[in-house]
Length: 297
Image (tube, rainbow, N blue to C red; front, top):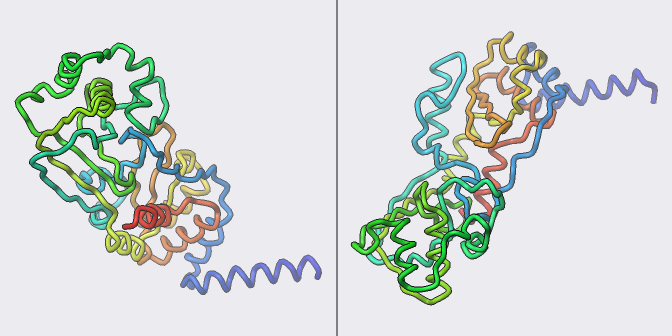
């Protein structure tokens, strides 16, 4: 086969692919052709770690009460429509317990210490240098330590907890302070077989199958590297053609990708989404679907 025949066959296959994707307009085909060849430093979305740290995983719970100004983009209506769909992806449920065994808790919402480390149990964390100053060798020490974390412990004040389907069954203490004291106290209680019960309020989050299906029906959601927003080829496709879009910064870690939402109702925005996927952009919806399946949602 000659080079010209090979080029012709490739062009024919790409044209057929564009037609299958519904990219029949001239501008849509141009956007698709250019976006699929973009060279951007895409990185896979991080896996959810088996860790005691709530902050170590994706902050999907933020979608429930997503602020009105959380999304950026040139058109207010596009941002508002994207926000409305995103807020239905995660469901929230409130549960109350009159007598909850605190030894079941094995997660913290406080910021991880600078020593790093994921730690899968309180016992692992309690054995680190960070917790060395928390000494518990008697029941009196235990009461002092847990009362540092929970000043109204002896009065039986309810404790606030949270749980998310993407973390499995792990329960987290919903406080941003005194994580070391709480973890050490609970580890000691488990070691000594101490009953440590309090009333509890549990906020449970889970990915909604229907909300996720709605998002998939109406949007491409792609994880774009920070370099994309200064790349002239990508920004030219996005802005020169006046494509509808919205951006969401959800992940916390430095240099984390931003989520680009492209409405499929727009032929040109849909073309950009399909092209970016072919060029290697991580599909956020596919990632969420895997999380949903893995957790038995």
